[in-house]
Amino acid sequence: MLLILPSSVVSKMGSPTSASIRQGLSAALDGQDHLIAFPTKLLYQFEDAKPYNLDYPIIPAAVTYPKTPEQIAKIIGYASTANLKVQARSGGHSYANYGIS
Image 1 (cartoon, helix red, strand yellow):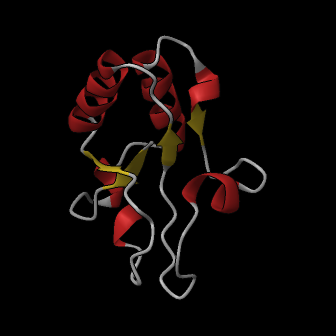
Image 2 (spheres, rainbow, N blue to C red):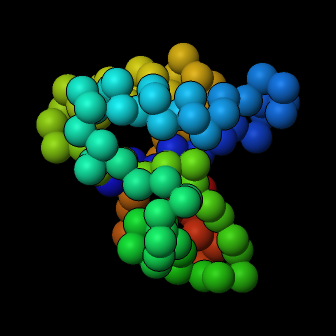
Image 3 (cartoon, rainbow, N blue to C red):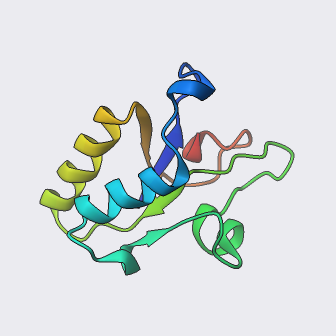
């Protein structure tokens, strides 16, 4: 699972829109949209983002579920060009949600 996070160093003017993130990730995953979850999805926080500590709210711009190393490379490549951060989902038991931030 890869979490796509908006970069905190990017200004609002330079940030990609949710529509462009959706298009970029869809292209990176060759149209396999079932491998991507967005905050507009019902129960997104509980099924996909899964924060450990609700006192530290973190809402990723998207969560991807790549199946191959090539898909991982394409997702990271897209995120790099769009100035987005990528975080591989780790254990998920960090008090401050470092596994998803």
